[in-house]
Image (cartoon, rainbow, N blue to C red; front, side, top):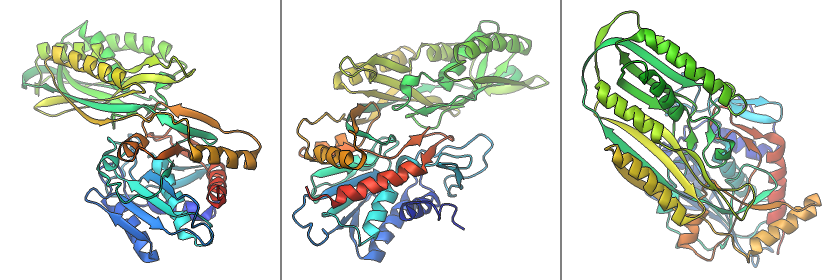
Length: 481
């Protein structure tokens, strides 16, 4: 039984619920890509795909719209797949559990993937309805946007004929985005040499943080669980020695981590809890407003044992590295009030027997600042003896002074609502910069319905906003200018 079948617009929520029923986390998009291909094939809509699984569809103009400039609609099919600590769902193989809360839809105990499943649902609903008047339409749906925009990087744009490009990967209704930051990923690996260590096993967990999108919400200065864990470990290290068995936290480079955990060996376990309590009191005070649910939990085994772990010296060295790493806003825009210019987020830490891996997302609207910050972080890692690898380097999207699409969208919005939309840029990365690199004459605007807490288990999509944006899209398509 469909949970959202009575929600308006019915076609949009029908396709969105279909999408939610298919596992489609980043790197796991084969099924959703096949669903999109089947959609086009069953309706006789021209489409193509490529080796990565990107899908492009094309539909001819409605009668009377042959001379209207064509429109490209674009979104991505992958989502940030995260779940609560007690959720047993396998997000690699199982779909989401859709639910409704007042004006919002959400997924039970997981992220929703409104970023960017709702864009795909809009595109499918438009292509599926022959009664909607429109110019020639091209729908581009990319893979693996969330992990580095790899689909957009690989997509062949040579047969894309439209030059008006509408990206539907934004999360605030009434805001038309006309520029975004560029980004880069860094991965560092710290070698480990296990040895036999004796003591009590101790598990320290930092949890309860809000997390969120590292572009759209980085200015809110929420706690980063990985770095807060480093701070807790440093406090314990002042009282006793530690050896790391394993350490983990975060789900993706572009998500502010809400939880992190270290499994350790300590020869003086009675000193752990007092040290943790002291720093925990500081954290509660510091994050009383920004992250009021922060908590630090300690579990200590009842008996000593022998474990394979890092030496106390290597552990102290690594904890020192953690306390030196930066995160958050590094510079605000001097030209746009309230806009972040440069930031970074330590999003993931993981370990195996050979190494500890740390992964960063770095963003800036200035290419030079992006590379300077990347080099600074790499220098910190190099000083600690870590190997550093840069990847997923994507350009920003510069504001275009002459934009017929933006002008048309503003005119339609004013006609519908009697007020002007907000024209702005965003610190989060969008695929438009990559597409502009392939087709410099693209005229790009990004928009979307209201969403809350994307990339987290608190993610919600507004039903009423989804309906209004749908009505706006229909008017935009109908307008012949």
